[in-house]
Length: 70
Image (cartoon, rainbow, N blue to C red; front, side, top):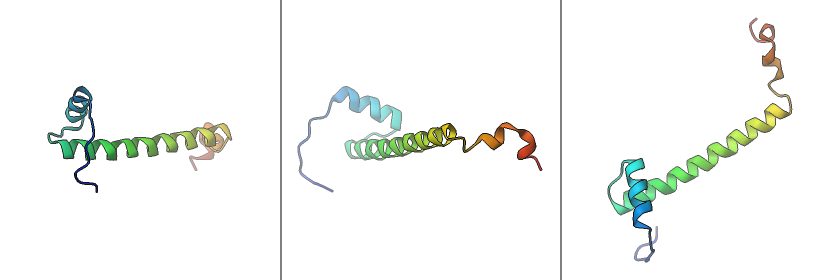
């Protein structure tokens, strides 16, 4: 954690993030936003992987209900 650094932050973007995240202070909002973007990127990577798996036919067995309702 870096203390004493000066960073310019867009006030409108900050207010929007705080409202969406339900935070109030600068530190809480910035930290929540950083964690949230990490979670979003990991979800996107997981969806991309699922798409690749689907394109490769990894889920084709579920197209026929008889194959998974035994």
